[in-house]
Image (cartoon, rainbow, N blue to C red; front, side):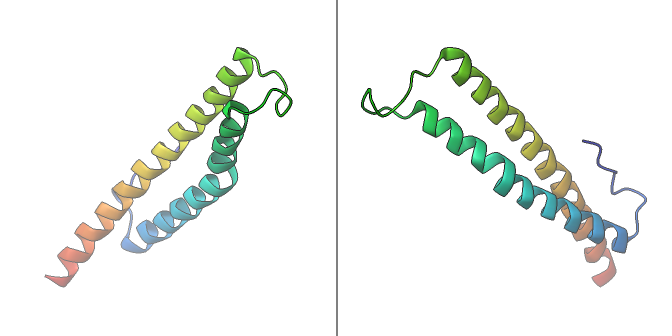
Length: 97
């Protein structure tokens, strides 16, 4: 994922980009990350023999890989959003002082 740097942007551009990143993060967490976590929990939940079909190690590993990839994406969005928010805070502090 390519996120522009807040350096050289106007305050308005930073606010727009931060809003876009926040919305993308919320959407990803709701539609991507949470369902993958629930899927992993579902296949790894212990129960009676008849309750679950046999789950292979490959299935668990591939599900964990998808969760980790999703977590990496979430982390990247959080870092980018944090950079924009820090830049916005610094610029508004400069304006008000």
